[in-house]
Length: 413
Image (cartoon, rainbow, N blue to C red; front, side):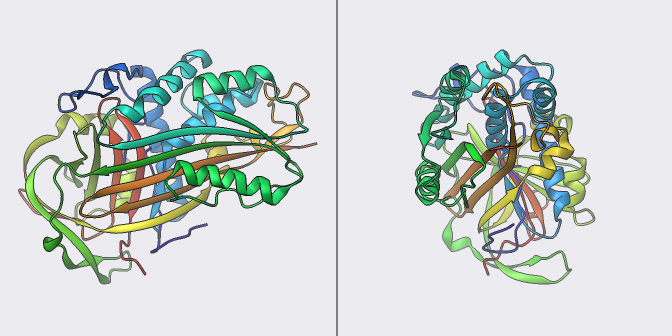
């Protein structure tokens, strides 16, 4: 499942960004800058709250799958990809997907309006940070796709819709994988392993992020420091260090601090468990309520931090996790995807996510591609991250969580 540069298990909300979406008004410390689209970003409070719940539900379930490795996923990428699938579903299948996405209090039209706004405005919130969102649909050239389904994906999701000769399996696979590579600056190149005879469609979302820290770490301060592993042993890692003023909060069981990128709209929030707690306990106790309270409690002040450099790739198939989250039917012969093709007989054979992240003294580069295959059925104290920790990459204006993760071993093998 993992293609790790070190033992890995890393989850995205977009914890790098933990409330996938939030309210419409900019936060105090994220005032829109010239050229920014922050003032046009519109995400309703109900949508924001519900989808933040989705992000933390995802994080907990991915972490449960294997607690011994680093994880990295993007709740934002997954949410958008499943949003496209929702537009092709009917009946119980649609109800389950909508409930899993925590959108059961929203109409499909309302959700699509928010997706459309995010696609148009999220990438331009901070002109100094590169954020790219892209969607695509690839279908077998002998398979009829409802025009209304194509139209809504083009309008609300800005999706490229392409017909391919799936009989030319290698050519089709390479074409789709090249699109994924192009959208992620070459960081994710191999999302589709094979085009099976029963495949009639692939839905893809790609998310790319690259931002320099507002306050960069000085390379000369990076030194070898011990990092405590889950086994209780330690290993030396490249620890970046900085003593500065940052937004931070102190809880009985963890310390949180924000590392802003560029103009401050995007930040990484690092959650470091206290020595008598653990990253797993922290994840289990995280919720949208705790996350929103934490945002309000963070205050500017001096803090002495240490953060390991790390680079990782991660891959996970999410079928069983999504089934447990509330949408099992879409993976069975009982799936109703008649808004894709009215004849029915369609199901989803895989929902997979490939991710990449690199953190160094300059900043962060991260990417995610979510692919869905449709088949025919029949300070005050130093905060040194020298033990497993959790982190999220999120955008402050919309409180959108882009990525989230857990690091248990930052050292490249």
